[in-house]
Image (cartoon, rainbow, N blue to C red; front, side):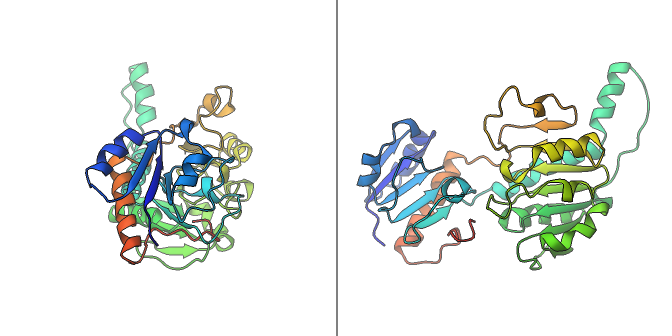
Length: 310
């Protein structure tokens, strides 16, 4: 594959331009914001680097599309993809970032931060013994690179980590990996659920009553995709104490509308899709590494299986 004309479309196009141009590649580049991206620009390009595809753009003549994010549902979910077009994704510090994000909220819960804040407001001295990480059981949905990194970090603290994947194939750092159909009986003993799954037709609204109603005051953290969650089922689980709290970083519609019921729920914590941010440096590095691997005919560890959607 010969790549000569590369189009980079991103809100951080200026930062990417500064980093990439330092490499002095013998390529033709165009850098631009998403709002200025046109079909004419893409007709010029051999490759597109972006966070997503616009619905009115025909990408099919390009040879390669590189996602600046880890997820590729904006390229594939309920869309037709020409399999002759190579699709790759960004892999960088996402696993570490998401693991630390999840760990922070679980520690917040185990250390009773909310309760001690309330006691402070009341000027009450009331000791509560914090719980230990090595007494906890965590279920991670998705055992790919991100899920495995979370499992590794959690397991290092003695957490009993279980995984759920499409195949149920055993992976390092997980005590056990199950398929979705196999994992239901394990749920009553689980203290925390973490979703890292990509959005596909199999994972759309996966988290609903048949999962939540098997839980007993568990915590739920969604760092995968918003559309994997049935929000009505989540709210019902919170109101009936199947869930003690929910931490949501991803939503079907982003930004989350101001009139959405999630904002007002006392057991829901909301962050604006920041658990795994692509920095300009990491985004540029992964793109440059992938470009080199393509041109040198090396294996692409970040190639997307467009049939599976991840």
